Length: 388
Image 1 (cartoon, helix red, strand yellow):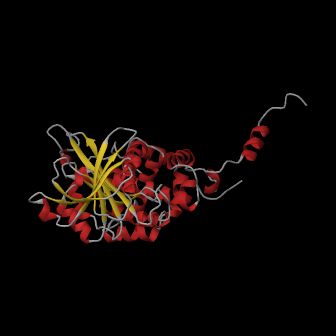
Image 2 (cartoon, helix red, strand yellow):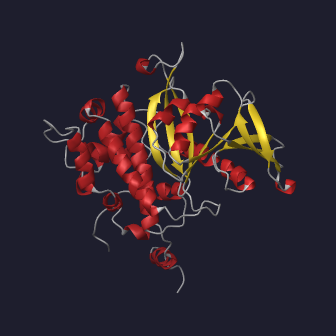
Image 3 (cartoon, rainbow, N blue to C red):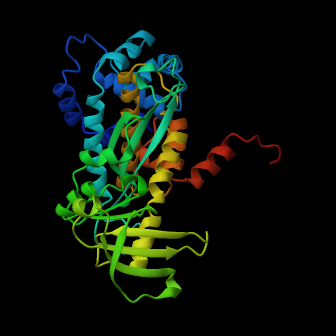
Protein backbone atom coordinates (compact mmCIF):
# COMPACT_ATOMS: atom_id res chain seq x y z
CA UNK A 1 0.00 0.00 0.00
CA UNK A 2 1.23 3.47 -0.88
CA UNK A 3 2.32 5.28 2.31
CA UNK A 4 3.60 8.47 0.70
CA UNK A 5 2.17 11.96 0.54
CA UNK A 6 -1.40 13.12 0.04
CA UNK A 7 -2.78 14.28 -3.30
CA UNK A 8 -2.96 17.83 -1.93
CA UNK A 9 0.73 17.78 -1.02
CA UNK A 10 1.71 16.42 -4.45
CA UNK A 11 -0.40 19.05 -6.22
CA UNK A 12 1.46 21.79 -4.33
CA UNK A 13 4.74 20.55 -5.82
CA UNK A 14 3.73 22.36 -9.02
CA UNK A 15 3.98 25.73 -7.25
CA UNK A 16 7.46 27.18 -6.72
CA UNK A 17 7.84 27.92 -3.02
CA UNK A 18 10.78 30.31 -3.36
CA UNK A 19 8.80 32.51 -5.77
CA UNK A 20 5.87 32.53 -3.38
CA UNK A 21 8.08 33.60 -0.47
CA UNK A 22 9.61 36.28 -2.70
CA UNK A 23 6.11 37.72 -3.24
CA UNK A 24 5.47 37.54 0.53
CA UNK A 25 8.72 39.33 1.29
CA UNK A 26 7.97 42.05 -1.27
CA UNK A 27 4.94 43.18 0.76
CA UNK A 28 6.18 42.06 4.24
CA UNK A 29 3.31 39.61 4.51
CA UNK A 30 4.78 37.57 7.37
CA UNK A 31 5.97 40.56 9.39
CA UNK A 32 5.13 40.06 13.09
CA UNK A 33 3.45 36.76 12.26
CA UNK A 34 3.79 34.16 15.02
CA UNK A 35 2.45 30.96 13.52
CA UNK A 36 -0.17 31.33 10.77
CA UNK A 37 1.90 32.43 7.76
CA UNK A 38 0.87 33.64 4.30
CA UNK A 39 1.69 30.17 3.00
CA UNK A 40 -0.75 28.64 5.52
CA UNK A 41 -3.38 31.16 4.43
CA UNK A 42 -2.82 30.34 0.77
CA UNK A 43 -3.16 26.59 1.43
CA UNK A 44 -6.34 27.00 3.48
CA UNK A 45 -7.99 29.15 0.82
CA UNK A 46 -6.79 26.78 -1.91
CA UNK A 47 -8.37 23.92 0.00
CA UNK A 48 -11.64 25.88 0.07
CA UNK A 49 -11.47 26.35 -3.70
CA UNK A 50 -10.57 22.74 -4.51
CA UNK A 51 -13.22 21.20 -2.25
CA UNK A 52 -15.99 23.72 -3.01
CA UNK A 53 -16.41 25.02 0.55
CA UNK A 54 -19.25 27.47 1.12
CA UNK A 55 -17.79 29.64 3.89
CA UNK A 56 -14.79 30.20 6.13
CA UNK A 57 -16.51 28.33 8.96
CA UNK A 58 -17.09 25.38 6.63
CA UNK A 59 -13.43 25.50 5.55
CA UNK A 60 -12.01 25.64 9.08
CA UNK A 61 -14.31 22.85 10.31
CA UNK A 62 -13.15 20.50 7.55
CA UNK A 63 -9.47 21.33 8.07
CA UNK A 64 -9.70 20.73 11.81
CA UNK A 65 -11.15 17.26 11.33
CA UNK A 66 -8.08 16.36 9.25
CA UNK A 67 -5.44 18.06 11.37
CA UNK A 68 -2.71 15.40 10.90
CA UNK A 69 -3.21 15.30 7.16
CA UNK A 70 -3.16 19.07 6.80
CA UNK A 71 0.16 19.24 8.65
CA UNK A 72 1.74 16.87 6.13
CA UNK A 73 0.21 18.95 3.33
CA UNK A 74 2.18 21.96 4.57
CA UNK A 75 -0.28 23.82 6.85
CA UNK A 76 1.91 24.24 9.92
CA UNK A 77 -0.04 26.93 11.75
CA UNK A 78 -3.11 26.42 13.90
CA UNK A 79 -6.22 26.95 11.78
CA UNK A 80 -9.00 28.95 13.40
CA UNK A 81 -11.88 30.97 12.04
CA UNK A 82 -10.72 34.30 13.50
CA UNK A 83 -7.11 33.82 12.39
CA UNK A 84 -8.04 32.99 8.79
CA UNK A 85 -10.58 35.82 8.64
CA UNK A 86 -7.98 38.26 9.99
CA UNK A 87 -5.41 37.11 7.45
CA UNK A 88 -7.84 37.62 4.56
CA UNK A 89 -8.76 41.05 5.84
CA UNK A 90 -5.32 42.45 6.65
CA UNK A 91 -2.64 40.73 4.58
CA UNK A 92 -1.90 42.51 1.33
CA UNK A 93 -3.86 40.97 -1.55
CA UNK A 94 -1.05 41.95 -3.94
CA UNK A 95 1.00 39.02 -2.56
CA UNK A 96 -1.40 36.59 -4.21
CA UNK A 97 -1.75 38.71 -7.33
CA UNK A 98 1.99 38.66 -7.90
CA UNK A 99 2.18 34.93 -7.22
CA UNK A 100 -0.70 34.26 -9.61
CA UNK A 101 1.20 36.15 -12.31
CA UNK A 102 4.29 33.93 -11.77
CA UNK A 103 2.09 30.85 -12.21
CA UNK A 104 0.54 32.39 -15.33
CA UNK A 105 4.02 32.91 -16.81
CA UNK A 106 4.82 29.20 -16.22
CA UNK A 107 1.52 28.06 -17.71
CA UNK A 108 1.84 30.24 -20.81
CA UNK A 109 5.26 28.75 -21.50
CA UNK A 110 3.86 25.21 -21.19
CA UNK A 111 0.90 25.93 -23.49
CA UNK A 112 2.78 28.13 -25.98
CA UNK A 113 2.72 25.50 -28.74
CA UNK A 114 -0.90 24.39 -28.31
CA UNK A 115 -3.30 24.68 -31.22
CA UNK A 116 -6.58 26.57 -30.73
CA UNK A 117 -8.18 25.64 -34.05
CA UNK A 118 -6.43 28.07 -36.38
CA UNK A 119 -3.04 27.57 -38.00
CA UNK A 120 -1.36 30.73 -36.76
CA UNK A 121 2.18 31.41 -35.69
CA UNK A 122 1.19 34.62 -33.91
CA UNK A 123 -0.02 34.72 -30.33
CA UNK A 124 -3.73 35.55 -30.10
CA UNK A 125 -5.42 37.15 -27.09
CA UNK A 126 -9.09 37.70 -26.30
CA UNK A 127 -9.90 40.67 -24.07
CA UNK A 128 -13.14 41.10 -22.16
CA UNK A 129 -14.56 41.78 -18.70
CA UNK A 130 -17.20 40.29 -16.45
CA UNK A 131 -19.06 41.97 -13.62
CA UNK A 132 -19.59 40.22 -10.28
CA UNK A 133 -22.65 41.59 -8.49
CA UNK A 134 -22.39 42.29 -4.76
CA UNK A 135 -24.81 43.39 -2.06
CA UNK A 136 -24.64 47.14 -1.45
CA UNK A 137 -25.25 46.89 2.31
CA UNK A 138 -22.47 44.31 2.76
CA UNK A 139 -19.94 45.73 0.26
CA UNK A 140 -20.46 49.54 0.38
CA UNK A 141 -16.89 50.17 -0.83
CA UNK A 142 -17.80 48.68 -4.25
CA UNK A 143 -20.83 50.89 -4.91
CA UNK A 144 -21.85 50.47 -8.55
CA UNK A 145 -25.37 51.84 -8.81
CA UNK A 146 -27.84 53.36 -6.39
CA UNK A 147 -29.08 49.93 -5.30
CA UNK A 148 -26.16 47.56 -5.87
CA UNK A 149 -22.44 47.05 -5.61
CA UNK A 150 -20.12 45.19 -7.93
CA UNK A 151 -16.58 44.52 -9.07
CA UNK A 152 -15.31 43.91 -12.56
CA UNK A 153 -12.89 41.20 -13.62
CA UNK A 154 -10.88 42.25 -16.70
CA UNK A 155 -9.12 39.35 -18.39
CA UNK A 156 -6.77 39.03 -21.34
CA UNK A 157 -6.97 35.37 -22.30
CA UNK A 158 -4.21 33.63 -24.23
CA UNK A 159 -6.12 31.42 -26.68
CA UNK A 160 -3.36 28.82 -26.58
CA UNK A 161 -4.46 26.86 -23.52
CA UNK A 162 -7.04 29.44 -22.38
CA UNK A 163 -4.62 30.84 -19.83
CA UNK A 164 -5.30 34.38 -18.51
CA UNK A 165 -2.16 36.39 -19.29
CA UNK A 166 -3.46 39.58 -17.68
CA UNK A 167 -6.09 39.98 -14.97
CA UNK A 168 -7.25 43.14 -13.24
CA UNK A 169 -9.91 43.49 -10.55
CA UNK A 170 -11.51 46.95 -10.52
CA UNK A 171 -14.70 48.71 -9.46
CA UNK A 172 -17.63 47.92 -11.70
CA UNK A 173 -17.75 51.61 -12.64
CA UNK A 174 -14.47 51.37 -14.58
CA UNK A 175 -15.20 51.29 -18.32
CA UNK A 176 -13.73 48.41 -20.28
CA UNK A 177 -11.73 50.61 -22.64
CA UNK A 178 -9.71 52.12 -19.76
CA UNK A 179 -8.04 48.79 -19.12
CA UNK A 180 -6.09 49.18 -22.37
CA UNK A 181 -3.91 51.72 -20.54
CA UNK A 182 -2.58 48.91 -18.30
CA UNK A 183 -1.90 46.32 -21.00
CA UNK A 184 1.55 46.31 -22.61
CA UNK A 185 1.03 44.94 -26.14
CA UNK A 186 3.35 42.23 -27.39
CA UNK A 187 4.81 43.00 -30.84
CA UNK A 188 3.26 40.74 -33.46
CA UNK A 189 0.46 39.53 -31.18
CA UNK A 190 -3.23 39.77 -32.15
CA UNK A 191 -5.72 41.29 -29.69
CA UNK A 192 -9.39 40.42 -30.23
CA UNK A 193 -11.95 42.72 -28.61
CA UNK A 194 -15.60 43.73 -28.85
CA UNK A 195 -17.03 47.20 -29.49
CA UNK A 196 -16.53 48.35 -25.89
CA UNK A 197 -12.81 48.76 -26.60
CA UNK A 198 -13.23 51.01 -29.63
CA UNK A 199 -11.01 53.97 -28.77
CA UNK A 200 -8.90 54.98 -31.76
CA UNK A 201 -6.27 56.85 -29.75
CA UNK A 202 -5.58 53.73 -27.67
CA UNK A 203 -5.70 51.52 -30.78
CA UNK A 204 -3.16 53.81 -32.43
CA UNK A 205 -0.80 53.31 -29.48
CA UNK A 206 -1.22 49.57 -29.90
CA UNK A 207 -0.46 49.84 -33.59
CA UNK A 208 2.67 51.90 -32.89
CA UNK A 209 3.87 49.06 -30.65
CA UNK A 210 3.56 46.72 -33.68
CA UNK A 211 0.64 44.78 -32.23
CA UNK A 212 -2.49 43.85 -34.20
CA UNK A 213 -6.11 44.24 -33.18
CA UNK A 214 -9.43 42.87 -34.40
CA UNK A 215 -12.67 44.36 -33.11
CA UNK A 216 -16.20 45.14 -34.21
CA UNK A 217 -17.02 48.57 -35.60
CA UNK A 218 -19.78 50.68 -34.16
CA UNK A 219 -22.64 51.66 -36.44
CA UNK A 220 -21.80 55.36 -36.13
CA UNK A 221 -18.11 54.97 -37.01
CA UNK A 222 -17.40 57.24 -39.99
CA UNK A 223 -15.17 55.60 -42.59
CA UNK A 224 -14.07 56.48 -46.12
CA UNK A 225 -13.40 53.61 -48.51
CA UNK A 226 -10.18 53.77 -50.49
CA UNK A 227 -10.42 50.49 -52.41
CA UNK A 228 -11.80 46.98 -52.15
CA UNK A 229 -10.02 43.63 -52.34
CA UNK A 230 -11.34 40.58 -54.16
CA UNK A 231 -13.30 38.17 -52.00
CA UNK A 232 -14.93 34.75 -52.10
CA UNK A 233 -18.56 35.23 -51.07
CA UNK A 234 -19.03 31.50 -50.50
CA UNK A 235 -16.95 31.89 -47.31
CA UNK A 236 -19.44 34.38 -45.87
CA UNK A 237 -17.25 37.43 -46.50
CA UNK A 238 -19.31 40.26 -48.02
CA UNK A 239 -16.54 42.83 -48.46
CA UNK A 240 -12.88 43.41 -47.66
CA UNK A 241 -12.00 47.10 -47.87
CA UNK A 242 -9.15 49.43 -47.07
CA UNK A 243 -10.54 52.51 -45.35
CA UNK A 244 -9.61 55.72 -43.58
CA UNK A 245 -11.38 57.27 -40.62
CA UNK A 246 -13.31 60.32 -41.79
CA UNK A 247 -14.56 61.69 -38.47
CA UNK A 248 -13.05 64.97 -37.27
CA UNK A 249 -11.59 63.58 -34.05
CA UNK A 250 -11.10 59.95 -35.06
CA UNK A 251 -9.03 60.80 -38.13
CA UNK A 252 -6.58 62.65 -35.90
CA UNK A 253 -6.56 59.86 -33.30
CA UNK A 254 -5.82 57.16 -35.90
CA UNK A 255 -4.26 58.71 -39.04
CA UNK A 256 -3.32 55.47 -40.83
CA UNK A 257 -5.34 53.05 -43.00
CA UNK A 258 -7.57 50.37 -41.54
CA UNK A 259 -9.09 47.24 -42.95
CA UNK A 260 -12.88 46.78 -42.84
CA UNK A 261 -14.30 43.29 -43.28
CA UNK A 262 -18.01 42.55 -43.44
CA UNK A 263 -19.02 38.99 -42.61
CA UNK A 264 -22.35 37.13 -42.72
CA UNK A 265 -22.71 34.28 -40.24
CA UNK A 266 -24.79 31.53 -41.92
CA UNK A 267 -25.73 29.96 -38.56
CA UNK A 268 -27.13 33.05 -36.82
CA UNK A 269 -27.94 35.14 -39.89
CA UNK A 270 -26.16 38.13 -38.33
CA UNK A 271 -23.79 40.49 -40.09
CA UNK A 272 -20.58 41.65 -38.47
CA UNK A 273 -18.27 44.49 -39.44
CA UNK A 274 -14.69 44.09 -38.23
CA UNK A 275 -11.89 46.64 -38.10
CA UNK A 276 -8.27 45.53 -38.03
CA UNK A 277 -4.80 46.89 -38.73
CA UNK A 278 -3.67 43.51 -40.06
CA UNK A 279 -3.55 43.49 -43.88
CA UNK A 280 -1.86 40.08 -44.17
CA UNK A 281 -4.37 37.63 -42.71
CA UNK A 282 -7.03 36.12 -44.93
CA UNK A 283 -10.39 37.84 -44.44
CA UNK A 284 -12.10 34.62 -43.35
CA UNK A 285 -9.31 34.02 -40.82
CA UNK A 286 -10.08 37.43 -39.31
CA UNK A 287 -13.73 36.42 -38.92
CA UNK A 288 -12.73 33.07 -37.41
CA UNK A 289 -10.41 34.79 -34.96
CA UNK A 290 -13.25 36.97 -33.75
CA UNK A 291 -15.30 33.83 -33.17
CA UNK A 292 -12.51 32.61 -30.90
CA UNK A 293 -13.20 35.61 -28.67
CA UNK A 294 -16.04 33.53 -27.25
CA UNK A 295 -13.39 31.54 -25.33
CA UNK A 296 -13.00 34.37 -22.85
CA UNK A 297 -16.77 34.31 -22.23
CA UNK A 298 -16.54 30.58 -21.56
CA UNK A 299 -13.62 31.22 -19.21
CA UNK A 300 -15.72 33.63 -17.14
CA UNK A 301 -18.59 31.17 -17.09
CA UNK A 302 -16.29 28.34 -16.02
CA UNK A 303 -14.60 30.12 -13.13
CA UNK A 304 -17.90 31.49 -11.84
CA UNK A 305 -19.40 28.00 -11.80
CA UNK A 306 -16.41 26.03 -10.48
CA UNK A 307 -14.44 28.49 -8.33
CA UNK A 308 -15.53 30.47 -5.30
CA UNK A 309 -15.55 34.01 -6.73
CA UNK A 310 -19.27 34.84 -6.53
CA UNK A 311 -19.77 34.11 -2.83
CA UNK A 312 -17.07 35.75 -0.76
CA UNK A 313 -15.75 34.72 2.66
CA UNK A 314 -15.00 38.30 3.72
CA UNK A 315 -16.59 41.70 3.18
CA UNK A 316 -13.57 44.01 2.90
CA UNK A 317 -11.93 44.92 -0.41
CA UNK A 318 -8.72 43.17 0.65
CA UNK A 319 -10.54 39.93 1.52
CA UNK A 320 -12.47 39.91 -1.76
CA UNK A 321 -9.38 40.49 -3.91
CA UNK A 322 -7.39 37.93 -1.92
CA UNK A 323 -10.04 35.29 -2.59
CA UNK A 324 -10.21 36.12 -6.31
CA UNK A 325 -6.45 35.97 -6.83
CA UNK A 326 -6.08 32.71 -4.91
CA UNK A 327 -8.91 31.25 -7.01
CA UNK A 328 -7.06 32.28 -10.19
CA UNK A 329 -3.87 30.73 -8.78
CA UNK A 330 -5.68 27.45 -8.18
CA UNK A 331 -7.08 27.47 -11.73
CA UNK A 332 -3.63 28.04 -13.24
CA UNK A 333 -1.96 25.55 -10.88
CA UNK A 334 -4.35 22.79 -11.98
CA UNK A 335 -3.73 23.78 -15.62
CA UNK A 336 0.04 23.43 -15.04
CA UNK A 337 -0.46 20.01 -13.46
CA UNK A 338 -2.67 18.93 -16.37
CA UNK A 339 0.01 19.83 -18.88
CA UNK A 340 2.95 18.33 -17.01
CA UNK A 341 1.13 15.06 -16.34
CA UNK A 342 -0.10 15.06 -19.97
CA UNK A 343 -3.73 14.53 -18.94
CA UNK A 344 -6.35 14.46 -21.67
CA UNK A 345 -9.37 15.08 -19.44
CA UNK A 346 -10.91 18.53 -19.00
CA UNK A 347 -10.11 20.90 -16.13
CA UNK A 348 -13.64 20.37 -14.84
CA UNK A 349 -13.12 16.61 -14.61
CA UNK A 350 -9.69 17.04 -13.00
CA UNK A 351 -11.03 19.36 -10.31
CA UNK A 352 -13.96 17.06 -9.59
CA UNK A 353 -11.57 14.13 -9.08
CA UNK A 354 -9.26 16.23 -6.89
CA UNK A 355 -12.15 17.46 -4.75
CA UNK A 356 -12.93 13.93 -3.49
CA UNK A 357 -9.36 12.63 -3.23
CA UNK A 358 -7.47 15.61 -1.86
CA UNK A 359 -6.22 13.85 1.28
CA UNK A 360 -5.87 10.36 -0.10
CA UNK A 361 -2.37 8.88 -0.08
CA UNK A 362 -2.02 7.77 -3.66
CA UNK A 363 0.46 8.71 -6.41
CA UNK A 364 -0.92 11.73 -8.22
CA UNK A 365 -0.81 10.22 -11.71
CA UNK A 366 -2.79 7.21 -10.50
CA UNK A 367 -5.66 9.42 -9.35
CA UNK A 368 -6.45 10.22 -12.97
CA UNK A 369 -5.79 6.85 -14.56
CA UNK A 370 -8.34 4.05 -14.63
CA UNK A 371 -6.96 0.83 -13.21
CA UNK A 372 -9.61 -1.70 -14.13
CA UNK A 373 -7.55 -4.60 -12.85
CA UNK A 374 -7.36 -3.06 -9.41
CA UNK A 375 -11.09 -2.38 -9.39
CA UNK A 376 -11.95 -5.93 -10.35
CA UNK A 377 -9.57 -7.39 -7.82
CA UNK A 378 -10.93 -5.19 -5.06
CA UNK A 379 -14.58 -5.98 -5.82
CA UNK A 380 -13.87 -9.76 -5.95
CA UNK A 381 -11.99 -9.67 -2.66
CA UNK A 382 -14.93 -8.26 -0.65
CA UNK A 383 -17.60 -10.38 -2.37
CA UNK A 384 -18.96 -13.32 -0.36
CA UNK A 385 -18.58 -16.75 -1.94
CA UNK A 386 -22.03 -18.29 -1.92
CA UNK A 387 -21.12 -21.22 -4.12
CA UNK A 388 -17.88 -23.12 -4.54
